[in-house]
Image 1 (cartoon, one colour):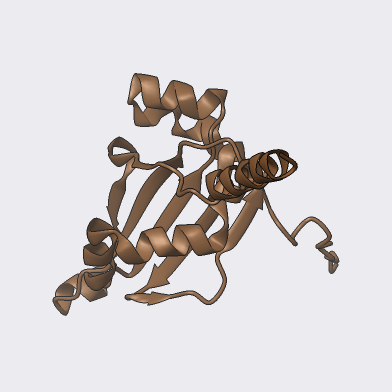
Image 2: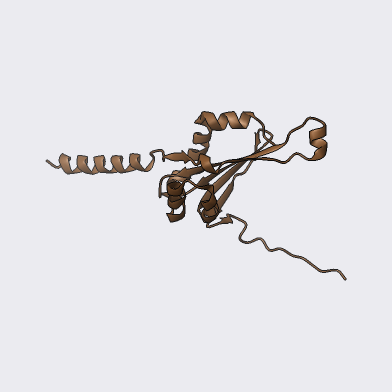
Length: 160
């Protein structure tokens, strides 16, 4: 008889633990993606085309555990579309992940890139590739500010 309450408690913790580690739903906000030609005249004269591409994704989960670096990198490694874009070796490829908020909900309802600027404070992380090579550290962002940058003080002097 004492075994039943203990078993129920163990089952509860196991269920709660597995639900915390479930993969979040990540949605490609394809209507906000853009491709920009950044070639200068010299590049074009020599047949080189330099392009920047930006991809945007919405994490449909309210929990910060859903946007851990390991989960997002696993998503990037397993997504065929992203892998094909990385192989194109754009001059710069940026992948931005946004958290759930009233602004991102409105963006998803209207499906218009015009509202993307309102979601700047909802960016969680940005990954960047330069000519197919990932930068060592992603930009982790909280409330529109790059984490670790809040203590940077700019020093300048005016010379006369």
